Image (cartoon, rainbow, N blue to C red; front, side):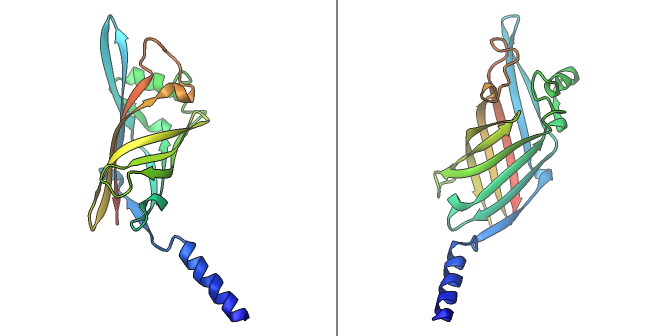
Length: 184
């Protein structure tokens, strides 16, 4: 009887464990996270491009049940760059990212819509400026025998995380463009 219980527990543990998860290796050189912020200046829309040079990605992919996959992205805010050195310094300051006080932005996937399509929406929690809010990230996924590539192009409302500097002059929505290459 005891052996039967142990066997049952072992089978249940195997079935509920992430046995089908595959740890993917983050290819930093082929990945990027960029943004475009806009503001009105002298009645004209002015775009500023920027991004982050340093970020880490952890991914446990379950190709049999993709909605059970795990994805975590940690972004180093001090690694931010933009098309203007003075702007970069201002973005790192307390008016925006406050990089000294909040050195990290984290996205952690909690679910997925569009499972089975090449255009899923990743659902997760984004923590920035010590505030956590849900974020839905539409993306395009390309899977081969050697890699998974996720490409996203979406808008993020910076005010949801308390980034309110320049409201009315600087657009609340920032365009995020990201490519993550993960090797199998």
